[in-house]
Image (cartoon, rainbow, N blue to C red; front, top):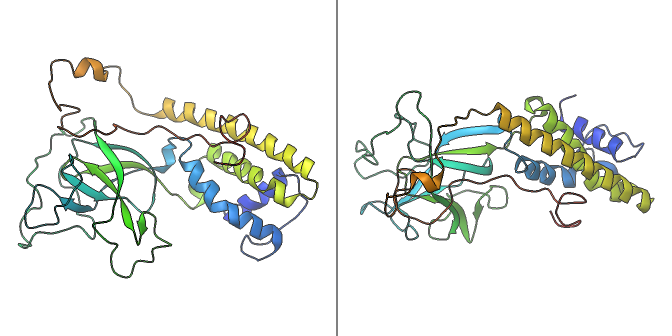
Length: 291
């Protein structure tokens, strides 16, 4: 009961249909309807809350370094470093300005002519057991650095013939905390699974049911279930997260610090992190047809 077919069948049931499918890729009309919506619902749902089970923390692949002269150094002003957007990233949470020591070098990282030389000389500022603090960063698109040879542009997230999605920051040797794409339902949280079933059911209810009035009713009801599950997940993830009351607010920490000293790194207008997205629909604060 932990395959995409099982999720699709639950969604078909929740949409009010008596259809039974043997495999989501079997090619029947009902399976095709589910297959067309499955991936998009999954990707949107990962952005709907900071799901604990999907949290990932990994070093980023460096594309360009504005502080170097022998390496690719075209980086949009006022940023210093440009990193590749991870292909399994569904939602960027934050970029720590104080990454730990001895981070592994991601595959595909740019390297200096002297293979033994360090890419940067930035010392680690986080003590063992210390807290990661967010730095400014910005998501952008850069046409200056094409995709690696052999990349299928239609299949790799963040890659296209016109450029690639990048993460700009002033943090050297940066890592990224993000929501990762988790394909296997066996790893999902129970609230996530229930929300995914409801979301998929809402999207397939109209094409699946010949009675469009009934289909609209099932669509509306499943969006209501989705809203409830997302609210519960946001509360649960917040309660389960590690937090401390001694974390000073920005407006207090930045008094008398002068230009730039945001989280310990200087310059650059950007964000400290992203919240969750709204999955649109009835009672969801969104549009009925655009999500």
